Image (cartoon, rainbow, N blue to C red; front, side):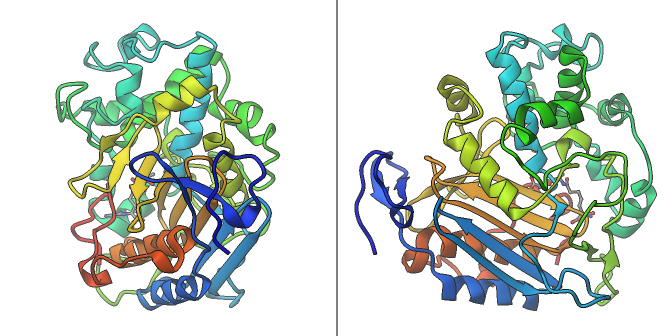
Length: 397
Ligand code: REX
């Protein structure tokens, strides 16, 4: 059923409103569940042991799974199981920081040096530059994971201090003059973590818990760094080696200390749907602060991908824009996106990584989930846009 709707009131779950690129209200088509199944099947064909999508319209929830969450036991993929969400963590970190901006504890346009004196090499770098990836700080993970499996094994059980990671970055020259250039860098969100800890006097773990996890009752969301296991029912992650044909490496257990506030959280599809919906629905931040997060810069030359403050925007083929984040963690690809009003949220994940085709195909679940049959494939998958901001994306198969 398709009904054109106006403002949010009195709209049934199946008739979620969306906003087009031009900003006008429009009707969101019903999800294309047959198309979605086909995309998940293609994700497996591209090399992922398992994949899943959870669509939440407020009242209607659609869940689809394919393949396995554990190749040894053969247990099926499960939308109630937990996994590593990688950079979706950046959106959590941003919410904490923006709440601190809201309370006046942090000024978005102040130099980071005001809060963390002497930590960064350039006093022109502001808090906003971190959140928008415009600091010019080198991404230390480029060096770490130049060789995928050896790089992972070298850090898998390591525990880094935040300062130690920042110093790995600042050993390199700046990549750009602060404020001028979008360049995705995990370093930015490690500095955000250090900033949160300095200003609040509490750990990022405590801040995620008190500001987001507890208020939203996110039962599967946690930050357990530096513990290496995922508590409860979990999805095994499988890292694809660079060498063609080499067997997948079970990468489930790791400290994720190399990423921390840039990528170390654990969650589930229901929790991520609830989180992005609450954020865009205005339940985590004041409207003026959410508006700041939505100030977008192109993140590549595609014309359809943008980065705000710890938040991505994707313009889908049917003209609908969705907001959220992607994640790449060894063994896991994640997409968590929602409409501008937060009324339809979609989380997809595949338990593979270092496989660009898996990531690209998984991204097509957003088309099926938000555009329905109105989805217009622009190009064949083989020629589709590569995943954005991947470390070593050029090499990924
Ligand atoms: C590190 C390498 C990936 C992964 C990374 N992840 O930087 C952050 C993230 C936390 O989620 N970023 C992505 C490894 C881009 C995002 O925002 O969506 N790749 C892998 C390699 C390549 O080792 N040599 O694919 O598992």
